[in-house]
Amino acid sequence: MRRLILLCALVACAQQGFPPGGPPDKEPPKLLGTSPDSNARNVSEKEVNLQYDEVLSERPGGASSLDALVLISPRDGAPRVGWHRTRISVRGHKDWKPNTTYTVDVLPGISDLRGNADKLGYHLVFSTGPEIARASVSGVVFDWPAGHPAPNALVEAVSHPDSTIYIDRADSLGRFTISHMPAGSFTVIGWIDGNNNQDLDAHELQDSASITLKDTARVELLAFIHDSIGPHVVSVEVRDSLTLHATFDKPVDPAQPLDSAHIMLRAADSSLISTKAIVSAREIDKQRADSTARADSVRARRDTAFRRQYQAQHRLPTDSNAAASLRRSAVLATMKPSKPIPVSDILISLVRPLTPGTSYRVEAKDIHNLMGVAASSIRTFTVPKPTPPPPPPKNGAVPPGAKPAAPGARPATPPSATRDTSAAKPPA
Image 1 (cartoon, helix red, strand yellow):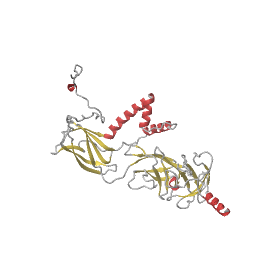
Image 2 (cartoon, rainbow, N blue to C red; image 1 turned 90 degrees about the vertical axis):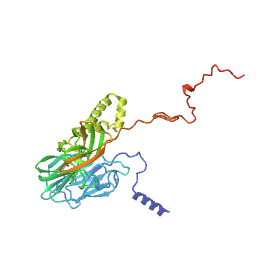
Image 3 (cartoon, rainbow, N blue to C red; image 1 turned 120 degrees about the horizontal axis):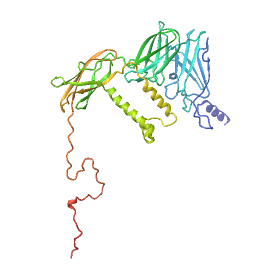
Image 4 (cartoon, rainbow, N blue to C red; image 1 turned 120 degrees about the vertical axis):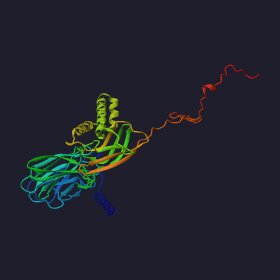
């Protein structure tokens, strides 16, 4: 019996679990120290160790593994991250290079066994030589077709001619800084890592720029899908008798002329239909939405009841983080690419109304994508006929929009069928 009790105690101690008793733990793990220390020089250790104040989860929330929460720059492949209960060890795919400055970024997400996650992350710098490199490149990655910054984009700076790769992940506003680099010539590549594998795939939005780095440099990266096929018209919507909405299957070069030489409307007999204007649908709709949003925002500051409705409609936080969220939204609104936003939809305004029930076709000629590849396409559509009015209700039928009578309710008697019985005499 004593052996059984001892065995059970040993098994219980070996298992991961929540400590018994005490108030519930809602604090994320705290970093107690690192080895080597940040800014250490002439480091000879084969790995970096980070010591925390409690047992860590091997599968943090929001990430597939601990490896996905660590970036080593310069990188030589996927990092190797080890879990040791209250400590994690980090090393490169290969051994550290001599006389090289390394940065180890532990991204937000390190969690304890209860799921409390660290929201700040940690940035550690060390050198395997006597000096720490001081040059850096910073900038912003934009999702160019969408016209806004790309949060959490990955950025690499590839040195020439040895192809050493320095890396950083952009913040929630698309801003990045690759620090502690040597001076030299680099190609900076930024992409939106859709599958979170930390590798650039062919279908992902990307952009690149060449720089010569002495001290600091700044670049703007306008990420888009590098496609070798030109844009095609995929749909035409009749907004009203004088307006058509045409959509392309991929973004169009913003420098592309949108005029009657490239966008034509023809009748079934191939005769040209005169157009009044061809403009970007995105800009028109965005101007209307921005105008409405500004008016709603002003009203929300004055009207308490409307403010609650406005916060719920736009999913704005109502707690103490509301101000920070609104500030972030305000910053995002001011961050725009230096180049015009690519066109993906156009509005075609006509001189005369289209004929209902008649077929037409939109012809797009020599339309360029963002890589300069041109294509031509044709899309046929038919103008819908007006919806006929509903027929008058038959006897006993419920007119459109009227509520049916409740079950068992006595039908109302028409006024003409009502009899006046006030003067009726009882039978003899």
